[in-house]
Length: 512
Image (tube, rainbow, N blue to C red):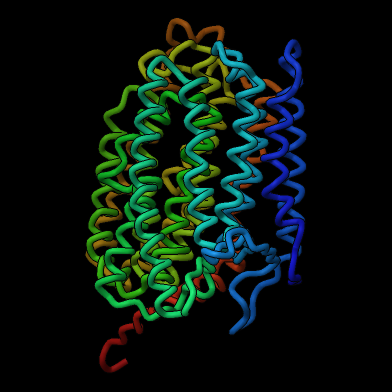
């Protein structure tokens, strides 16, 4: 299905933003009302996401890259439009976001109550953030992408700085300054891209379809690529631009940590795949070996630091540095397997990290601590909580049969065909992942029941309702990954065509 103005996609972006404004304007005195309204709005947004997903049709060879588009002129003098559309890559990330937000609202029902902040503000910012992220994934105008990319900083800053832990102000400012610095570089590159388009097309434009395929000189491509890539590498984050993430993720409330690491950070890797590669193909190929090296360092570095952590939330944050290394590795391996695996990895990581952060949040609320040494023997007093934690952890270490295995396998297989040495080194991340996940589980869940854990309650009904869909998707995407790959693969093929890259030919031994 394709129409000139597909309004459900516009509504998908607008509804949570308008819902956030509504929640923020609710009267004081009833702390449950903002939560209930926010949950209803998020579920309606999810329903719209399902409508968009059902309307999407797998593209045929030579078909338009984006479907379900809607576009209105915004700033005609600059060639800027409010333009939305989806391909398979964007659709999967939109659905992931639409699923995780109601999960976060249910799982973070009491997050704002633990601070002096207002529940109205907390849940309003969550909804506004959802709308901005959905807009980024759906934007087909590069200037609109940039505006929404920068606007996301505002709700996330307040979610951390107003509702976070003891060091929340430091973490929020650090997150904001890193992201703002990257955004300024991206803005400079955006201006350069507009000048190039004006020179070649006679009028400047930010229309994605018009910009893909421009004959930009290689040296100019390199500078423009770096402006976009550094912004995305900070957002992802990719080593060595990752240092803001452990502070922000550990100080944010658990549900906000899910949104930060599971959703917002995916905008960085999505931007690499959506903008860096198709707009600057020659520069992408030129810088790919260096980015592969950074990715491998991030995989190993993040895993090693995760092993040494004593704070559960910081441990999970460092695992994500390692996981984002895998995603960037798959993107810049420049193979269809690698990029399909990287896209699926973004989705699978979102679900596994959501389960881990939310369960750790439940544990910290019960125990009053996030320190590993304060737990032990939890499985004896809270078996459902411990079992959920185990499934989420096993997914994070890519156990076969769970969702992350397929995406990690595709990334490594796709990388091996072009960079075999890099793929071999990257497999060390799998071994280290087993160490940090199993050691974390062993220290917190097994052994004798430690003092302070004896009366720990198991998961309650609302918490089960939040976690169960995520765990079900972890299993479903592990057993039936082809459902997602059928949507992703055609869009990856179109990206490969835009970059002018093909998969390496298989090597056949002589005499065979």
